[in-house]
Image 1 (cartoon, one colour):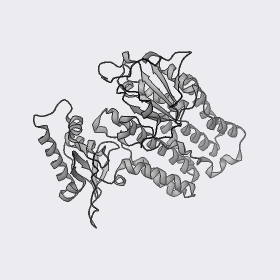
Image 2 (tube, helix red, strand yellow):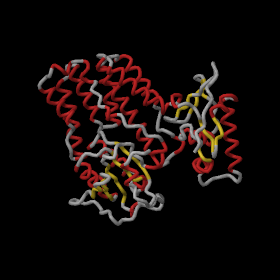
Image 3 (cartoon, helix red, strand yellow):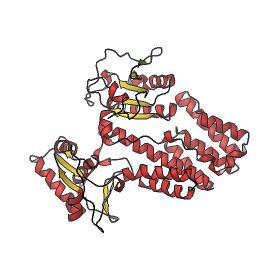
Image 4 (cartoon, one colour):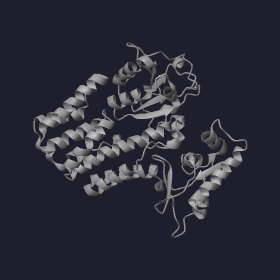
Length: 417
C-alpha cells in the first residue's frame, strides 16, 4: 500500500485529535467534531487502524458493512467519506482524509492520536522519574491514564487482526496506572496511592506490581501488619488459583518489611521500574501476521487450540496435526530448537492445567496465541490463558494471529525486515 503524505499544516491551521481508546471521537481545537451515525464512525475507526496508510476499499467495506452491504456499496462508502469530511470541516476534512492508491487514508499525525500519545507520555514519565522530576512524572502518568476511556477501536467489535494491538494498549494503560502510584509514593502522596491501589487490584488481581506498591504504601504509613496481611492474601489467592507463589520481588519485599528495612522508607524505593513492563510497539497490522519483533534467539510458546474444538463460528483453519502432539501430564512441550518455538496444543476442558505446566517449564519471551482460541466453545478460554501467562511469566509478550495452513514458526520467531 502507498503511504499518503500530508502537507504541513499552515500556521494557525487546525490539526484534529483522534481518539480510539473507547468510542471513536475527533476533536478540532478541543471541540468534538460531528462524525455522524454509527456506520460513519465505523468508517473512520477502520481508517484509523491504517496509521496513515491507505486502507483498501474492499477491506474497508467488509469491516464496515460485513454481510449487510447495500446494492451500490462503493457509492455508499463515498457518501460516508463526504459526511466525515464535512464533519471535520471543509479544509481539515480534505487535508487529513485523503484518497490514495487503492483506498482512503486518515493522515492525522500519530502524536495527534490517543493511541500514539499514550506510549509517548509513559516513556516521558519514566524519563522524568529517572531524572528526579517526580512531580512532572505524576502529571504525565495522570495524562496517560486519562486518555483511556474504554476498549480500543470499540466500534469494530471482534477483529482478530487488532487483538495484539488492543492487548498492548491495554497493557500500557495498566502500566500507567501502576507507575502513577509509584511516582506518587516518591512525592510522599502515600494516602492517594493507598486509596487508588485497592481499586486497581480489584480490576487486575494477578498483577504483582499493584500488591507490591500497596504493601509498600501501607508500610510507609506505619501499617506494617496490614502490609504483611496484603502480601499474605495475594499469596493465598495465587496458590489457590494458579498453584504458584509470588515472584522474587514480592518475596523480597515481604522479608524486608518483616526486618523493618529502613531503606523502604526512602522515597525512590518505589521507582524501580523494569523496562520490560512496557510492551514493545505493536502496530495494528502486526496483529494479523503474528510478528514478534525480537532477535532470532526469542523463545516463544505457541498455544494452539485442538482443531475439533474451534467450532463452526470460528471458521479458522489450523495447521495439519502431523508433527504436533497434544500436551499431557508427561509430554507438554515439543521444542523446535532452530527457531526456539515450543508448541502447546490444548483442549477447552484442560486448558488451564496444560498451559500452566508449559509456562512452568522455562522462560518465554513471547506467548503466541492462536486466534482460534477466541472462537472456542468456552468464551473464558482466552482470558484464562492470558491471566496464567501474565501471572507465571509477567514479562513475556502476547502475540495473537491466525494460522493459514502454513508453518507459522518463522513468522513468530524471526524479526521482521
